[in-house]
Amino acid sequence: ARKKGKTLSERANGRPEETTVEDQNVLTNRQGHPVYDNQNQRTVGARGPATLENYQFLEKISHFDRERIPERVVHARGAVAHGYFEAYGKIGDEPASKYTRAKLFQKEGEKTPVTIRFSTVIGGRDSAETARDPRGFAVKFRTEDGNWDLVGNNIAVFFIRDAIKFPDVIHSLKPDPVTFRQEPNRIFDFMSQTPESMHMLTHLFSPRGIPSDYRHMQGFGVNTYKMVNENGETVLVKYHFQPKAGVKALTQEQANAIQATDLGHATKDLMDAIDRGDYPEWELQVQVMSDDEHPELDFDPLDDTKVWPEDRFPLLPVGRMVLDRNIRDHFNENEQIAFGTGVLVDGLDFSDDKMLVGRTFSYSDTQRYRVGPNYLQLPINQPRVRPATNQRGGQMEYYVDLGEGQSPHTNYEPSTLGGLREADYPTHDEQGPVIEGRLTRKRIPRTNDYAQAADRYKLMMDWERDDLVFNMIDLLGQCDRHIQERMVWHFFLVDDDYGNRVGEGLGVKAADVAHLEPLPKQRLTDEDQRRLSNLG
Ligand code: HEM
Image 1: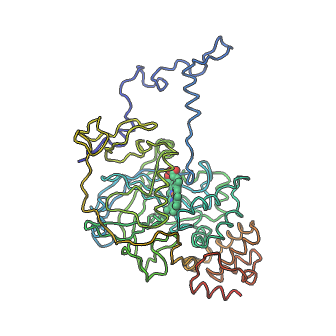
Image 2: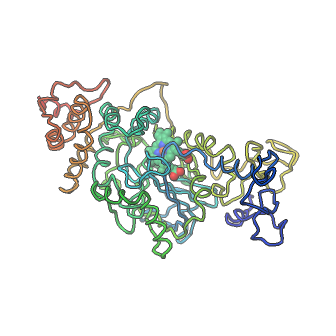
Image 3: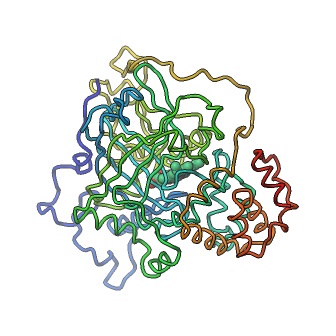
């Protein structure tokens, strides 16, 4: 059995006990040498040349030279807070154990510590928090079975459905490699060739695209995961966080006014709320589906450009999450925190969602580069339980993950000399449906790129639709004519009103786009075909 280690804060403060100087407040260098003069370099004479053996000065400057680590390639700007998740013991009206054996959900009232990082996606580390951009919503649950990361966004769907396209979508949204400006022409060049992005774009350009702050937004796992119960039975799952304080957003005009004076309003709002004891709270809910292909649906349950209709797949409450503690240091707890979609605990699993598999490789890969190969030894990333591994060495390793009773000589397995042994499976190794197929590169059959964007467009309130149309025209107005025309063509395939209104703002009529052929390899539904023939 694994033994519980020290708590995170004990370890974070786990510095050497003894001090080389009597007064703890005396400045030292990292070797423990007292610093007698922090104002003047050591020189030959008061005006003289500096000397190279000036250890204290060189230590100070060379550490400063390395103060920054690479910022995250996406989601660089973020805010972190700590708190807890409290389970209801149930999933909807059923005992949680019906769907999952994950321990954190089983007992009503059981609390699991969490750390959460909210973020914007495209801007750099110091960029404005008023950007029209998805917001990251990444939660680290420190469970008794190790960490579980749920790395989500505030919008329920995504631009693309296959991870192989992620570098492209991000390159189009990031600054132009020459002008280093975010260029609408590049963004819509890519999106106009990517019909599955229409649903996400319809959300992003609506008022939802600029949440008022981090406390008033939803969180979604976006990708489809699985839950596994004690019998090895699996279900497909989508995760939702609903803010108790309600959802609020900014119009572009309101956002511009804030941005004129403040680039970090959302971080400040979060920290201030926690400081005054107004603890932000969300309810965690799940949607559940049997683990199969669901041919009866007009979308694929593994497609992250789709939502699952709530009337057919109701939101089932699982627990609540409260944030009640601010960070003490931005670098240690925000820059160095590392989340990943591969970080699951027993009873929670991946699905074959083609985005999710790609993400699962990408997070730990980037973190080994961004933070270093031993990023999981940092206090902010350590699990609550003590890891016992045979991993050794690497830059910045600062302790050995020795198991209780493990011989320090035995960093391999199997062994008869006091090494670690494998854990017993909680139940058994086989779970879920049998999958068969030929190796291939194919898009999924049920792409259905427009129907849910249409539902979303129709569901909006008038002012939200007005804002969406205004924002689209604003950016598309800066694009080349052929890109405008292709985008209007897509909007007509979503909804006539959408096509007409954005088209009107750009001077593009239905007749102007009627000649456009579907994109290469694009799959159209019967409804799409009908709409297309109406265009002419
Ligand atoms: C951060 C990759 C899709 C949510 C990141 C990072 C990478 C990445 C490399 C930086 C991580 C770090 O430096 O620690 C990818 C890939 C994707 C993808 C390859 C698609 C295949 C998504 C989707 C969501 C999402 C669909 C929303 C559900 C996030 C969040 C963060 C993040 C919230 C910030 C985590 C933090 O606060 O540290 N992603 N991502 N990503 N991604 Fe993704």
